[in-house]
Amino acid sequence: MKTNTKLKPVKKADLQVVKPVKTTKYSDINLNAWKDYGHVLTGTLWQFPSRLKQHGHSNEYHGNYIPQIAQQMYERYTKKNDIVLDLFFGSGTSGIEAINMERRCIGVELKDELAESVSEKFTPKQLVTDVNIICADSASELAVEKIKARLDVMGEKKAQFLMLHPPYDDIIKFSDKKEDLSNCATTEEFYDLFERVAKNGYDLLEKGRFACLIIGDSYKNSEVQPLGFECMNRMRKLGFVLKSTIVKDIQGNERGKGRTANLWRYRALAGGFSIFTHEYIFVFQKK
Ligand SMILES: C[S@@+](CC[C@H](N)C(=O)[O-])C[C@H]1O[C@@H](n2cnc3c(N)ncnc32)[C@H](O)[C@@H]1O
Image (cartoon, rainbow, N blue to C red; front, side):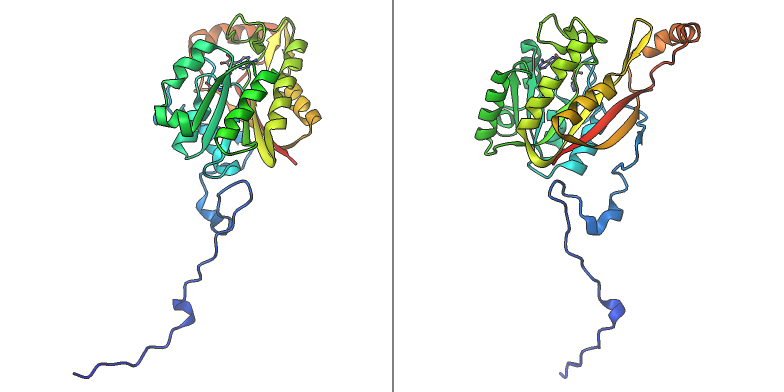
């Protein structure tokens, strides 16, 4: 049988140009396929209709942040296997999302019973290789030593991302411990303690990498306490370079506010202030 060995000429239009993957030093986002990342937010106003409750997340801890923030931060500012250091670990949102997105995490939490119960959200294997939970005061030298020891076990010298979600001064009291940032005698003391934690975070973060501060403002003595701006400035003072100031809509993500909405509206009208419907997400880079 005679076979046709004559090849058809290839037309230029038939050739599909496959561009090489192009990423930054701090993210796996392929810049040569940037149009595929429509889900990654680059604007400064963030609105999520509701809190993500699947994939290991729940809303049992009063004062946790919504997991969508971790998802956005990790995708833009971390690579697979990177270590996220969270110095206010709380109910472990940063750790759960680290597992979901194949990152690793070291979390520091002051309350020992909380640190213990959060450990139950992870498998024994994950607690060895992927998530390390430390019970300590994040402002202390002891915490730094413990974090360094865990980094060493995980084969790293520094963390690749820093997450800071401190108490918003005394809005929610987390414990009676004197080291607790929600237990400070004055707001000035809160700022100073926050700065000490942020300084530890700065020292433990790899150069060129990013940090995220999530925080809202408060009212005290009929006056706004600009916690967000002050903490942001304390971080700039430490050497962090401010990269983004994001305003996040908190309506719909908060628990229980609906019940007292009318009362707050009356108070606002009578007292000349506005009801907080946002919090801040500040993004920094360590140059
Ligand atoms: C706003 S919550 C963080 C919630 C967490 N991001 C989550 O999603 O569950 C702040 C946490 O910081 C803890 N905390 C307060 N002072 C601390 C300190 N000095 N060192 C470590 N943790 C502290 C509190 O116990 C509380 O759990």
